[in-house]
Length: 292
Image (cartoon, rainbow, N blue to C red):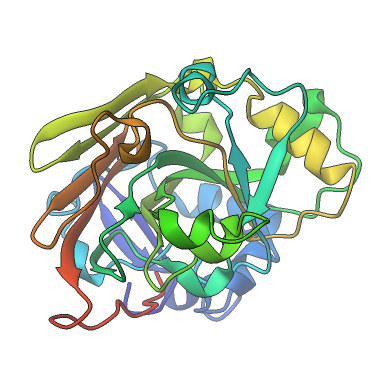
């Protein structure tokens, strides 16, 4: 909160630097660099295992929350990782990973304005993985031990730029300011009954536009970590946007895109909600990169 690493539970919250008497830094990025040590310390300090889902119940104003990992060095994003989403785009399920990136400057917190750069901005709810230690040539069997936690993400996409020119510009089209909200919490994998089977849902103005379970991922979280880490090291604090299910606007008939005044709520079971209110470029400022 307020740019400082904070542990929040149903029983309250504490500032990491203050509670650790300076053992850990206030910057969340520094905490990820020492995640295993931090986890051991936090367990000894005594926060409850259950993660809060209601910011107000935990005494936290959602507007004060930043991104759980505000300055990732790498942001991986996976395309066509649900069969129904591949099908709605006219594609067969992929045999290998479809990978692009969202540039880290687009990463913001969970309750932010979404400034629309055009009239062709689309929504894509996704489970986001935050790495807790360096992962290199990791097996799928060991992959969960490299995960700091899970959070909610939106892979907002400007479809004109994304598909412009002779070669698609996925990374640019998905990296406008504010196009990577994440949060509201980082929830450690051990909290979930099954971290590979979580319900996710996206609504616009109260209308449900996407709903699925992460058990339907073509390449589940352990496989993503194994395949990505076979190519390049995954670093503490890095993000993996794991893919979106069917229901995006560009695949609808007629197509549907976000307009000023739309309210987008993205929810994942056991983690919580993102909330963006859409505004035109001429009437709102871009969201700031507040750090949790």
